[in-house]
Image (tube, rainbow, N blue to C red; front, side):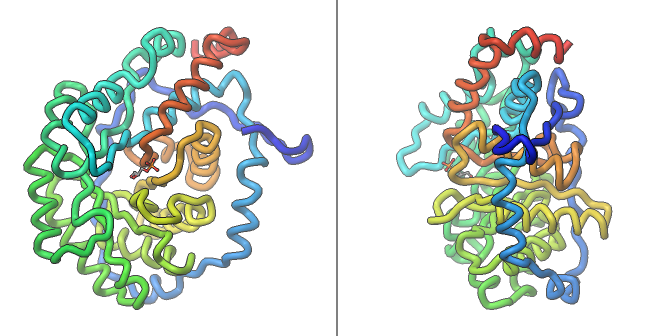
Length: 339
Ligand SMILES: O=C[C@H](O)COP(=O)(O)O
């Protein structure tokens, strides 16, 4: 994340209080609220203003070199390490879980002072939940299951609700549901609210992330309204995409969703998490997202109980960048910053 011009550049300090271990125990449950249709319909998104702002994001902030390793470590702690492929096997899922337990080489973890660093979660299809749960025993890393007929969400409603129950029974502590896009496209906010409420109830103690599939919602205004409705119905996180749409996580969509989260927090006092997902594979893009969160929502959202990346290939690039920072010219400064 390099600045484009001297004039625009502002430096981003390290993520506040990088902890030795990542504590997610204080993750809050969103109790939800009644559907407030006036609030939903008043939600607007000015596309040209949002796009103008999004264009400036990658260039307007720089991360001080001595803080880059800390930011990369923070990004790792917020990854839902994902495999959602038709040819997933138990072996692949077990290897992924081993990677979640030790996301980068042990010497790099030692060098940055975070030997116990793990990813935020492992995210799999329902069929692989039991395998992942077994492979992660004792690690404290939760299994996230994509349920409810992922990715289209068009299986019969009772089956989608039942799938959530099965995933929870198999050991999933987090459930990523997919909404019915049709409800949004037809402006049927009550139907979306009722669906989300039913999914929320089926999750029981598990945390629930609502995947909006923003690439299929038509307008940014629909994204803003769908975000609010899902939060009102009790979503603990709102998530951009399944990774299977033709357009997945983007900065304009992220701005809209993050501002909906901010609005919801300001009016209700409830913090809802954010998960951009799909197509995020470069460390520098991850740092842009973290900067955006820090700027729009503040440091409290820079922890894995309120922020996740849904990503299958991001970790590899972060590991390469981390190695560069730790073994390169910046390692002395990093050690000083971390001490
Ligand atoms: O929810 C996570 C996404 O499916 C991952 O997408 P990706 O494979 O493009 O990183």
